[in-house]
Amino acid sequence: MSLFPNYLRHDIAFVKGKGAELEDVFGNKYLDFGSGIGVTNLGHSHPRVTRAVTEQAQKLWHVSNLFTIPQQEEAARLLCEAGGMGAVFFCNSGAEANEAAIKLARKWGKEAKIILEPEIITFQNSFHGRTLATLTATGQDKVKKGFDPLPRGFRILPYQDMDAVKRATGATTAAVFLELVQGEGGVRPADYDFVQELAAWCKEKNLLLMIDEVQTGIGRTGECFAFQAYDIQPDVVTLAKGLGNGFPVGALMAKEAIKPILSPGSHGSTFGGNPLAMAAVIAVLQELKETSLLTEAKEKGKYLHQLLTAELAEVPEVKEIRALGLMVGIQLDVPAGPLIKQLLEQGLVALPAGENVLRLLPPLVISKEQIEQGVAIIKRVLVGSKEAQLV
Ligand SMILES: Cc1ncc(COP(=O)(O)O)c(C=O)c1O
Image (tube, rainbow, N blue to C red):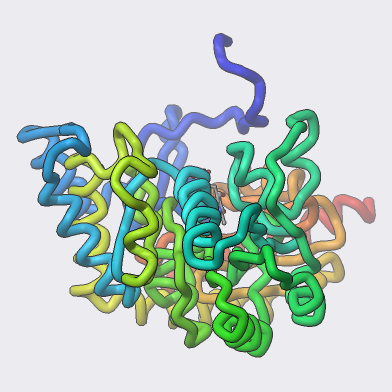
């Protein structure tokens, strides 16, 4: 095989998908509780997104950002309207969106606060991407191994420790950057009070509050953005994953007052925001705006959480079930990897998060019956694996 061995892959090749269903090369059907990794939030082959991308593909795929791109302006308008923001920059992935946020925070720190070497506070167990700056911002050593020297300018603090934030805030602090639900770190929703206190602290100390919504954004938590569940208005938000429902696209959003920081020539991307990607983004945002999917996602998330809690109550390996909307983490005291293999054998696609967490990110279009079907498979596998251990 001519690929780098950087991914540990399952020996399954999917060829088709519709809604929450996938089909492999042999015609085996799977129920998808992963949505890629939280990407196809509207489900596979969503008719509106497919139509929009197909129509755009027949007209014009790409023009450079040296020209006006009306689809980009419309996508930015819809994002700003949904998130109460003032400006958007489009790129191609989550790491790139976060890289742009880091650059924005540094330049803002220099220009608005006259800091020579601006510092960004991030948190342990976070995940912000695989580029050099974003892996440095990430609060997990495993993603950094072998890649030093790393850039300066990050302070990684214990998650949800407000005292640590207060102690670490100094004359060189420019921004605080966090996920409201740590996704790769095990589906850990932040406490409401911590987020409120952090937002107030950022305001008091004139720090940018930057939220990484690469995984939590675009309806995943039952709100368009997770920050809406926490009743805060961040200064900066990053997006990717669900934004194009599988079409690769990322975005950085910021408040109007910060807009001038990305001055002409300060940042850019060849592909970012091209008409094809923007067709997908506009279709996704219109679908969320014009349908009741967000409300449904909230209800379905509650139902999934309740059902899992009831059905797995007697399974000793299950230590905790954490959720916000359709972002669910089942904390186990055994490795999640072997269970995921068994779930696949039973026709369910699920994800790991860290060592011991089974992560469920089903599409927002999942039906009640499919939720029940998925939970039944999880229960069967968890109970079965316990019985197998006892034999
Ligand atoms: C919260 C968060 N930030 C950033 C990223 C990186 O996104 P990408 O893989 O698109 O670069 C991820 C990916 O899992 C993520 O979950």
